Amino acid sequence: MKKIKKFLLTIAMTMIFSVSAFAASGFEFILNVPFGINWSIPTGELKEKRGLMGFDAGVDAQIGYMISVKDGFGISVLGELGYSWDMYGYTAGVVDVGGGSGSSGGLDIKTKERSVSFSFHSFKVGLLPKFNIGFGGRHGLAVGIGGGVKIPVAGQIKFPDNDESLKATRKDIAEFLSPSVIGYIKASIDYYLFFTDNIAMEFGLYLGGDFGPKMAATAGGFGGNAFDFGLQLGFRFGPKA
Image (cartoon, rainbow, N blue to C red; front, side, top):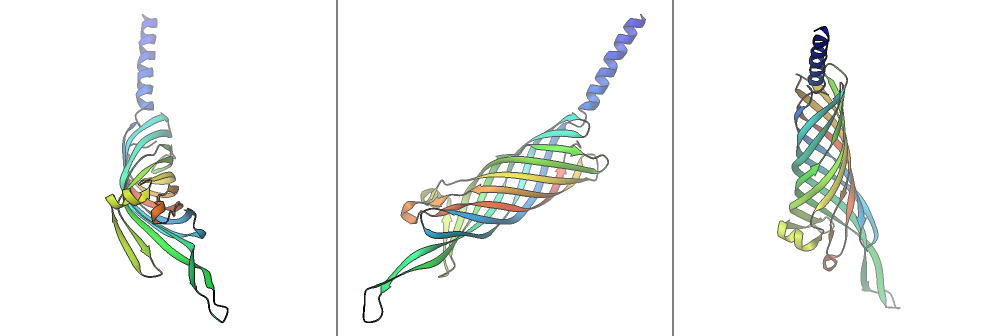
């Protein structure tokens, strides 16, 4: 009888500890607002090309599940959906041919610097796994790395040198840009300040890269990628690590 009681007690304690170990697992939802700057990396065959500083902002919803691995550590598997506004800037040398001056005549060939900026309103979809670290009490930290695609639904191309501006629909983007989506990768580090066991304020930093489209060859063949850096603020709804 004592052996049976001991066995049942062992089973009960194992179940209690198992429940405790995974008590922090659960549904996770994060709503945040990222905003920052980017530096463009131009591609294409234009001469003397260089990148300019641009900007990005948006609203992201990250939805998924956090699995508690042990006390103070959990892994989140999160899908990312959102809206993104991105502006990229470039300059490039454009050959300008004019009539020669003086008695020798001939052609006057010069390379002039021209600038252009692209801005896109995009729907974002991706995957962002996170490693959650709990410090006890009201404090937590999460490190994430992931990626996805931004699907531009509207955009604008500006030529500041001559004040020209062209608006683009999704149809225009699909026709004149290749590819017509923007791939992205992102790494983030977030600090959580918990108000309750399941609600926290988020303060974070992110680093990322955008693999931007370029214009079709018939439209100049230029475009580029970008390096992103910024802040993100938001709210997290889910269990502590």
